[in-house]
Length: 98
Figure (tube, rainbow, N blue to C red):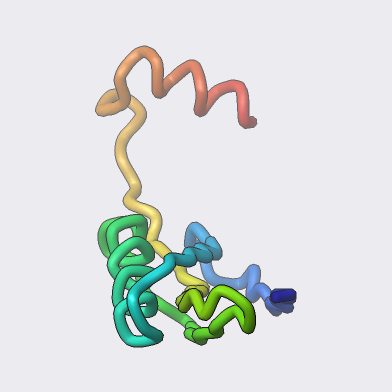
């Protein structure tokens, strides 16, 4: 199976952007897809806004094993904090970025 993702990113919105892709095996297509969706949902950041998603299943011809695939594109609003609210470790990281 090949998977290609093309994403147009709107840099006007001040949000963290991301893509998550998960796959899983199962007894049948529905079981495999449900497991893949559970994995994907568990890895989505808190307060994430899903912009788009795609799900699919396939079965291998020889082994008849079912696979589920789920891909999500998301945005997460950036929570602004005052500089004094950051820990020392967070301050070091934020200063090195700028």
